[in-house]
Amino acid sequence: MDFVEFLNTIRDNASQEYQNRIPEATRTNLEDIRVAMIDDDNIFVANEFTSALLNKVAKTELISKRFKNKLKSLKKGKKPLGDTVEEIFNNFIKGEQFDGTGNTTALMGRNLPDAKTCYHRMNSQLKYKVTISREQLSKAFKSYENLESFYNNIVESLYNSYELDEFINMKQLFKSALDHNAIKKITVSDPLTTDGKDFIKTVKTVSGLMEYPNVEYNSYLTAQKTDKTPITTFSRKKEQILIIDTATDVALSVDVLASIFNMSVAEFNDTRKIVIDVFPDPTMRAVLIDEQFLQVFDDLFTFKGWENPESLYMNYWLHVWQTFAYSILVNAVAFCVEDTTAG
Image: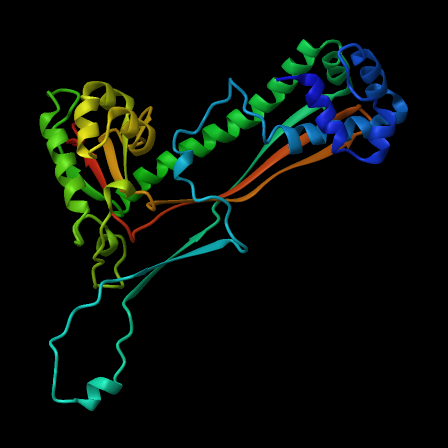
């Protein structure tokens, strides 16, 4: 990262007062910026700098040491207005025999669609706090190397913590779905102790059958008890995602797995397979899901700051509010082994 450009990006987007008090950065005037930044008359300038550091720049920079949530690609983005998402699925319509008698009763009657509805509400409100002192800020401006270290430490501590919690919460959705009969469970031979052929055969069979409309691979009926009409749905190959743990991925042939989706290994690894560390449920080896199964939304992502004038430090909070949910309206299958720990 070019920290001269970094400082000037903050300055270009700062208030007029900030621009008047903080000079444009060059390769040789970092000491001038440091003196201005920690001047007792410029306390608000330091506050504006650190706020911009977190709010504007940190959000867009890619830090090489940042932990990345492996499941992030399955998120559904920022939630629209309100704290509830309504998910609607219109079921297949049953065909009827043609009646050529001109039955006016049938003509005037109503045939409402079998619409299934689920609601997903915000259920996570986390905050991450970091403290920045004037002494830290002063030391950071001793050199561009110090400034980069200062920046990376702040960003990594906040973002790594947020990304890890998000990753854990998304993985937990698979266990929650399994515990609540909201994902189809198929028992397989353990690919960690066998040659994996039966496991791959089962995954390939399920993936193929998911392409055709059926009621077998969604858990609408078992996840709720009020509606007795099953869902008929399907998932094209390009809509299917295989999530697998590291040990299972190592044990299996990636060439064979890729062939299930009629893709090259590179295409498969980039688009259809996600490798995680472990599943929360120890019996789970993999899940094959429709890409709409995870219903994860960002409700709020913002920084807030507060200055303690008595002790001359600033506290900043990263607030992350999210919705973690899964859909019972789409296909989702968990491939599990026998629980050897059960009594």
